[in-house]
Amino acid sequence: MSELIRKTAVELAQLIASGEVSSEEVTRAHLERINEVDGDVHAFLYVDETNALEAAREVDKNIQAGNLQSPLAGVPLALKDVLTMKDVPTTCGSKILEGWKPQYDSTVVTRLRNAGVIILGKTNMDEFAMGSSTEYSAYGPTRNPWDLTRIPGGSGGGSAASLAAFEAPLAIGTDTGGSIRQPAAVTGTVGVKPTYGGVSRYGLVALASSLDQAGPCTRSVMDAALLHQLIAGYDPMDSTSINSPVPDVVAAAKNQSIKGMKIGLVKQLGGEGYQAGVRERFDEVVALLGSLGAEVIEISCPSFEYALAAYYLILPSECSSNLAKFDGMRYGLRVGDDGKHSVEEVMSLSRAAGFGPEVKRRIMLGTFALSSGYYDAYYGSAQKVRTLIAKDFTDAFSQVDVLISPTAPTTAFKIGDKVDDPLAMYLNDVATIPVNLAGNCAMSIPIGLAKEDNLPVGLQIMAPVMADDRLYFLGAVIEAALEAQWGHRFIEKVPS
Amino acid sequence: MAELSREQVAHLAKLARLALTDAELEHYAQQLGVILDSVAKVTEVASSGIKPTSHAIEMTNVFRTDEVRPSFTSDVTSQNAPEWEDERFRVPRILDEE
Image 1 (cartoon, each protein chain N blue to C red):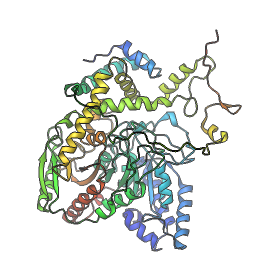
Image 2 (image 1 turned 60 degrees about the vertical axis):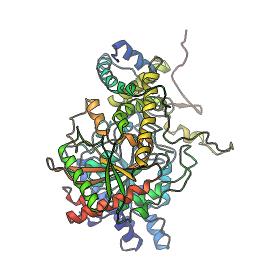
Image 3 (image 1 turned 180 degrees about the vertical axis):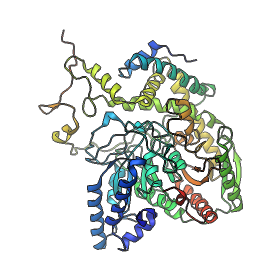
């Protein structure tokens, strides 16, 4: 195994910028690693070897000419298969888009290219980002590098697993209800859901437009900050993009002290229903924060108890509308076009053949929640709960700087355990969903292994809208303190 | 409050343009009923005095100037078309032949 693949993105970027190692060498090392382990892990749906190597040589040429495109120039990255990249297959983990090649780059991809980041390929995900285990991918599940019989989280299990398997030092995920943070938690990696509107959604195939947000997935807090800074910022191509300066997340990630910081423990997240080993690691960090000089107090967010219910009405409603465009007429799978079936029959046959069980379930749930006679009781009530949750956050942030909780109620479960039990699957997102509903930002960082199963546990930090820097401010200090205790970086414990 | 009949699920599938098998209709009727029972919890706290939120970050009327910009040519547009004929998407018949 090349030593290069175990380095952080910061370390690789420095080696490349100084000319000590070329981007091509770094890219080749990661492509070799993918070749070696992805048969087992299945993090990638598509590896773009030729273009990646060409892009790497281009960066090397630029560096030799004295042009360093960004602090991450030449570093490889794995891209979730829900973001478009011109002429490269984008499936969203669905059969309905098999073979579809987008005609344009998403804004995230444009910014990565301009920064000289090398895109290795597209990562596996639950179909159209609906799921918490990557088992709902039409192309087969991704496996967790910590234990190949377990799930890597979802929907962005491919992106998180690619990091833990050392196939890529950086990845991009998208988070609608926890799809960056929960995979980060169960794979022992770092994942950030930026403030809604912080990163452009142009070219992000929509699941729920009012909740979706792309963000960085990495193996360290500083790597996440650098990637965050590259992809964030106003984009006129996205009408929900926030037109104000990106918080200085890189400066915040250099922070070394949380003396006097006010940290709230969310009373409703972390008690009953949370695995003992998750709670134990979490409680240890709470004690650590106190010893580092932070003021930790319990905060009640009573409406969070209704977040999961509201989310599973709002999300299906938006997705039933967003996915109506997949009808087999202009692109994507078309089935039953034999001259005998009407256009509506062809649409229904194409959608039935192209969508998997979870997507069908949520489309029908949303169709129901939006239907006449039920709209007010279901969708309307869920929107009111959304108001209450945002109010809980506003009240909380009037008392504390950030809130914390476990990221997920359990460690990685076994593949197959929850695949046909939707309610059990939905519970994975119980701690991550409130942030998506209120639009603010959150981060998950690894805090150790659960005693009972030796699997990674994640801690979630939540901050107000456009205060993404606070995530890094606290995340950097927790990471440094824990690494000092362990004597090594967390990811080094992953079996190789 | 929510017990979904097989007929109701068949109607939803029709509205959502999903050609489901009988076995799928049975399965979803049962599963959707369970999910709806669980999410109906939202009605417990959603009183009439609360303003609904459709978007977390409030924004209204984001405009751009209405100017002519280049768009995809037909050879680009047709790249992913299931059927393409005479510079157009070919689709199944829309009207009954009667």
